[in-house]
Length: 185
Image (cartoon, rainbow, N blue to C red; front, top):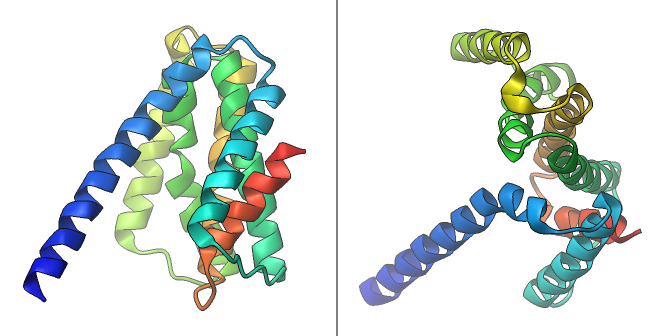
């Protein structure tokens, strides 16, 4: 039993490292692909759909309101992130997308009726101040349009997160699969 648990832990660590490497290199790799952002998003959606479908084998789509909104939000997140990467620097796209915790806290209070904790307020204030400073500076050579799309990517990432939290008894993997499928089109 202990060996199985140790193998599972090792496998989880390896998958986490692979995921981190893929996620951290995504923005830079997008710069090297000479295709329209929508073509990149669609191609990525096809590949991801195939991989996630193989993983799930028999996806259980409920098409609940939360799953559909989550799928649409996920698709928009992927698409806006790719577009932002084409319109601004990869660093700007990544940093501005990760304003999502602000939006999760705000949407969580509004939609899920969660109380915003004191540390959430501090996070919101400090991330917001960081964004203001980011925009007051030259934004690392990025464009206003690209940076705006990157912030929008953070908002829809938050919407996707909230939609998945609304499905706590379901499988959010199907929501991401639906999002990939929507992105193809």
